[in-house]
Length: 263
Image 1 (cartoon, rainbow, N blue to C red):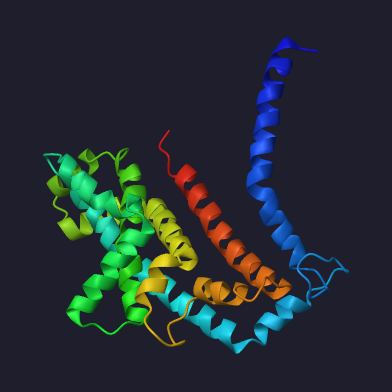
Image 2 (cartoon, one colour):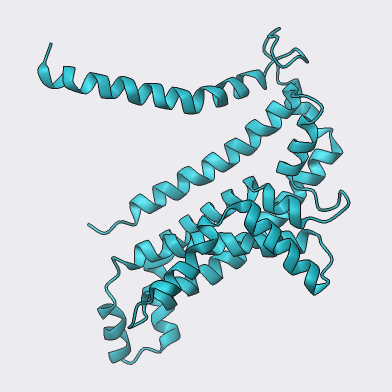
């Protein structure tokens, strides 16, 4: 056996074991979502009837609609603000460690702490809870992720092109739309997809800031309410769909991040 191959073999085995530990439960969940039996652990044959059952469940459809509303609005707002924040921070002449920490604090603060803080803040303002408070809450942490992705692209951006454009008589607005924006577009899209994924999956903050009533329940909250009475193939099917949407958006985001790298 080749010495270099034998040296890599233990590392590959460890890698396979780690990936198996991470993704085997997910694979089992996806498999059981096609289980014809109503029991979560008893396989009785392949069936897609549980996916059809989701379409007939009005509570799930309402929650899916709320999730899309929250995710779309939070993504659009956080993408615009996050991009502007990235430009402002990266073009500063003097760097500030305090400002850096403040900008990315929502990424590292535990969700439960941020959720309680937002709940207290909205309560002190006397603001009624609903989808609007969930959107505001999601923008707060999505904004930091968008800013991080866009700033990674700005690290490789040649700002002398902007200066040359201004020297040639272009206005700041024209320079942004014709030079800066096209270069940043892949990272902006990647950041927005990441924000959309995080918003779709988020549970704790939405749970604290949704308020009473079923009109502001999102899909993660709906899944939580369903599993309190036991896991069924219907829950597995719903979780599989949510995971598929999130994984697709994340893969596209990662692909765009790779494509935007400057040789």
